Structures are given as structure tokens and as C-alpha cells.
Length: 250
Length: 270
Image (cartoon, each protein chain N blue to C red):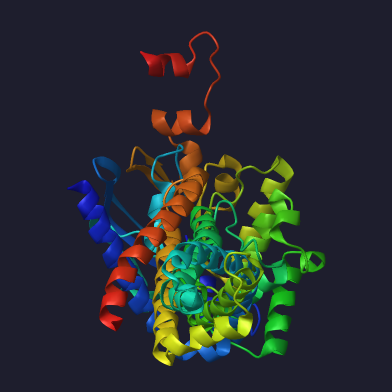
């Protein structure tokens, strides 16, 4: 019962934070500096790890599917399988999981630390709403950067699959044949659905991490607890949302 | 008590005057779950007055201060600033209140300059040149001109307190609140901070509430003093009345004897 109450309280406070943040949208143009800074932190600093993981996920996917599909004489469809899997599912989910681990944890730690050391209280006494200067620029930045990250994850993942498909002896499919198969079964809608998913997951991760950070109570030990809570909650949320968004987009 | 000189707060930057504000605490009670922190506390702070709220650690002083700036909501009773409910958002928009936190609560990711410039920038009080003038003037008042480009982590404890006061001053406050401004400071720096508080009040007639257990601060700069013990107000009077108080709780608080033969912590155990 207590857990259910806490979950409901968490949902309520997150939605309240969202409403409060959106009420400050008109101030966004004059927060350009903060927005760019957050774009850099969310996008640029996450990019290398997204690229590395996408490359290897594409590679492993090509390797596994090549190994299995060879038995059915269907290895010419590896490009389609890798392309669709990454665009529709693995790209957005992987980007969101990396975002939760890298950016969500950092947001929760920063805001929890500001809360514990009374910087948030100081903002409130100055009549500067934390939702305006700490949450809104992050939400705006993730909306802009998440599709960019997802597109890069798609391209690098496809490329990783193509390399493995060419240089693995038992697959040995040339890149033109690989990409032709990829294009044959994939529509623009598949990529778009993946980008919509990435957008939803990224927004949820940042919002939840901000809310958990801002609601930290207690001493420095609670900062660590908030970071753990933000990452775990984000991961659960990504997978739950994945089911519902996928169902809605099918 | 506040005299006629202090009916208006003088702006440290523009030298214009705005009416000084009063603060009224009426039957204030606050509980955190089963823990009762404040019990029916009532007092009034007159416009332009320095009111020092003293008391042992954990007596509810800082919680009371948070009620005045609207960071806490009362369980019972009410807190008003110039007749307006302290917890109401409009009150913070209409009355400029500044709280100097015990640990400074400076924004660690910003330089001292940016810490001070945040309020005028966010409220678009002036253009960047005007903000620079204001910030440098506040730093000058607190003798901190050379610290402008430093980060809070590069400052000593005393400097952090002075920066926190300077940041509050940039808000051109009608009500200044200080939470333990002299804690963790050496005696000379404590005296300096006390002088700053008194000077700001004398020059700008800001209504000032100081939460402290610094006896020297209270006996030197307070117009009136309140003492909270166990969430209840046990003394309210001028500093001369405080000196002359015969209440054993007040006497023991102000002049605690170190009794090695019968130590207090042993009495607490029994």
C-alpha cells in the first residue's frame, strides 16, 4: 500500500512539474544560453557512446541473424532485419537507456545536490521558479537532441551491420546488396515511428530525473539514493512506455 | 524598537525609498509528523527593526524563518508580512524578501558575479550594464570587489557569508532574514558580520530578522530579542531587558556554566 501511494505521489508530482514547466514556455527564447548548454550536455556528450553501442548492436544483429538465416537460405534479408530492428526498436530504446544512465543520473545528482545544499530554496526565495530555469531548458533540449541521437544510432547501427555482413565468411553480403534489402522492406514510417519513440522516452527520462532530483530530502547520502531512483525509474518507464507507444504506432 | 527614521527602506542602489515592512507571527504551530517543532508562537517585528531570534539548536528557529519566506506552511496559526499571507505567491512578488542561508546556499556552478547577477537578470530589472553596476556596488559595500570572478568553492567561510549577504542586497530587499549568519566563523569574522547587519539596517532601514545563537550579536545589534525553547517563545524583549532577565532558562542560555563535576550530558542520560 505504501509503495502504491509513493508511486501515485511520484506520478502526481511529475505531472505537476510538467505543468509548471510548460507554463514558463514563453520565457524560453530568453533562456537561449541554457538551452544550448543543455543541448551540448544531452546531445554532444552522449553522442560517442551512442555511436559505439549502435555500431556493435548493428554488428551483433547482423552476425546473429546471418548465422540463423543462413540455414533457411534467407541471408539476403539481413539488411532488412537489421534495418527494421534498429530503426523501430533498438535505436530509440538504446538511446533512451543511455540517456537515463548518462544524462538522467547527472540531472538527478545536480538537482538533488542543489536541493540538499539549499540552492533550490534560495531560488524560491528569489522568486525564480526552479521549473523555469532548471527543468524547461532541459526538456526543450531533449526534444531537439533525442531525434538527432536516434538518427545517428540508426545510421551507425546499419553501417555496423553492413561491415559485419561483408567481412564475415559465412554471410559475405556486399554493402550494396545489404542496403538494397534494407531499403526494400523499410518505409519512412518505420524510421519516423522510431524517432517518435525516442522523443517520448527522452522526454520522460529528463522529466522524471528532474522531479526526483528536486524532491530530494535529507543529507548528502540522499543524493546517491536519488540518482539510483532516477535511473531505475527511467529504465522501468522506458520499457513500459515502449509497449504502449509501440502498440499505439502499429 | 524601530524609530521614525526607519519607516521607509532606502534602496542601496537608487536611494529611493519604499515603506519598510512589518512581520506578524500569530499562534504559529508546525509539526513534522508526530514531531511538534513550533507551538503557538506569536510576536511582531516592527518596520525597520532588527529582531534577533535566539534559542538552542533544534528549537525551531530556522523552521520559523522558513515560514516567513513561504518555504514552509504552518500547521496552525498564520504568518503575515505587511499584512499579507507569507505563504502566498503574490506576497513574494509584491514584497522583496531576501534570506541569507546558514551555509550561504550560493550557486556552486556560478561565479560570485553571476550569483549576484542572477536575480536582476531573471527579473529583468536592468540591462547588463545596469546589472553590472548593481552587482559591483553590492560587492563594494561588502568589500568583495576582488572576489567577483571566483567560484564559491574558492571562498573562505566568512567570504561565503558576505557573498550571500551581497546577493541578498542586490535584491533591494524590504525584509532581510539571516539564518545563523555567524555560525562556523571565528570571533572577529562574527563581529564583522554583526557590523554588516547593523550597518545595512542603519543605512537602508531594512526590516531585519536574524536567527542566531550568537549572544554577542544579539546583545550588540538587536532592537528586540526573542528566545525560542522547545518550540515555545520563552522570552521577548529589548536587549537591555534580555541582559536583566532573571528567568533561569534565559540566564542559563546566555551564561551557561561549564560544570565538570555535574556535566549536562550526564543529566540528559538520566
